[in-house]
Length: 238
Image (cartoon, rainbow, N blue to C red; front, side, top):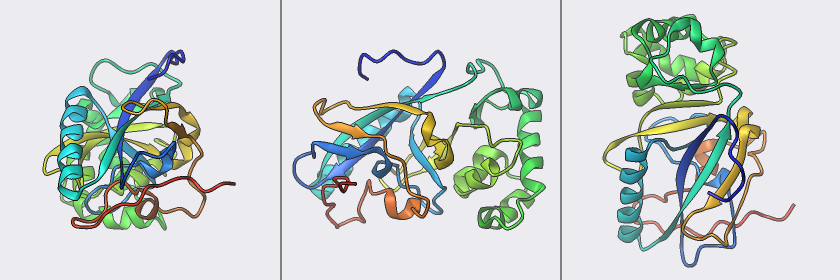
């Protein structure tokens, strides 16, 4: 990251950007979300945790070589209003933290999140897709792994709308491994305070957020389909 002072509480996430030919002088962060297998939540998803980042970068390198692409690493910070809970999250702590790691939930907190989902989100398509897994009693981490758009259903509820980052496991298009990622809901885009291009420090990373009508499946342009070749993405002038 750059020399900008980190917020008192922040989460650092990392993602990768693929392109054909040289890395462009400007990359828009909104074009760098990791593509997930299955549904696409309305969130920016990136690698979370040292091991996930290592495995993710290795998968990105292999994917780039296989598809004759260039890739670079983007690091960014998400500012939090509350300090990170170092222990297992308890139900009464959910309201006081804006970062939740599904692998660090107490049993009672996991049950509380299941209760939130089981209460439903009227008119939310993500909830409709998630209803069957919830009925099957899957825990939150497994539920999101199977149905990523559950993130939308959760963050649409008043009880969790304040959460800026949810760390969870995910299946990615570029990796055969299940990796840990962090998802930042689009409506919390303003919490992203800094982004830099680790391997290409002269490349600027623009923080302009997604438009109201943008869909993650259209804007998360990290990886083309196998055999396809990605074009360099340069934000259009405004």
